[in-house]
Image 1 (tube, rainbow, N blue to C red):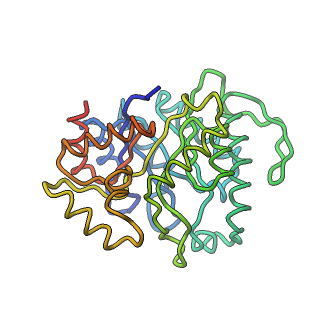
Image 2 (image 1 turned 180 degrees about the vertical axis):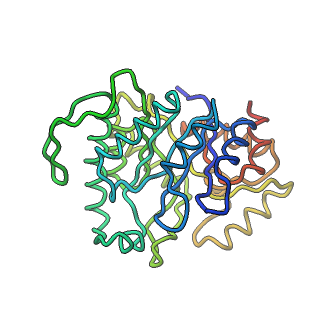
Length: 303
C-alpha cells in the first residue's frame, strides 16, 4: 500500500542562516517536515534549534536527519526527543544514524570505532529509544548499554523513529524496529570523512529494499520509506543536466540517474512524474530536499 507523499526541507545549521525563518517559509509553502542534520562544530545544534522552530510554527513537523547516535546516550536522547514532541504538540520525529565523520570524534575526545561496531551500537540504541518513546519503562543489559528503570514518555506520546544508514544488518534491523527508513544512495565514507561514494543504481536500491523487507516481514507496508534528494534542477533539458552529472559522478549512468530518486532534473511536470514513479515502483513516498526554491513548485504540482 502506497503512503501519501510527504516533503521535507533540510535546513542548514550554519550560524549565518536564520533557521527559524526558513522553517516558517517551508511551513507556508507546503513542506510537511523541517529537518536538521548533525555535525559538531561552530554551527547551530539541531535539538535546541528545532525546539525554537517548534515555538515559532504550528503545523510543520520537525525532525533530525540524522543525529549521530554513536556519541549520544540513548536514554538522554529519547528524553530530549520526547520533550520536543510534547512542546510541539506531537510534531517531532527522531532520526538517528551511526555517525561517520572522524573530526567529530576527535573534537569530543572519543575514539571512532570501526563501522561494524558503530552499527551494532546504533542498533542497540534504536531498540532502547524505540521502547522509551513508546512509554515503556526499560531495564536491560546489552553489549554497550546497561539501563535500569529508564522511562521518558507516557503512553499517549507518539514520536516516529527514523533510521538512516546502509548495510544488510542495519537495514534488516531497521525493518524490524523503525517507523521510517532513510535512504541516501551513498556508499562508503571517503578519506576526508565527509564525502561518500555514490550508489545511485536501481539495483542497489532494490537490494536495500529487500534487506528492509527481510527484517520487516509483515510490517513492511507500515514502514515509510524516505529518500534524501542530493541534487535538484528545474530545467527544460533534463538529458543534458543528467549527462553533466554523470561526468562528475564515477560509475553513474544516465539510466540510473533518471530512475533513482537521489537526483531530480527536468521540468516541474517531469520531476513530479518521476516522484510518482518512485512511489509506485519502490514505495518511496517521503522526499527530503535542500533547495526550497527549486522544489516548492513541485510540491504545488503534486498537491
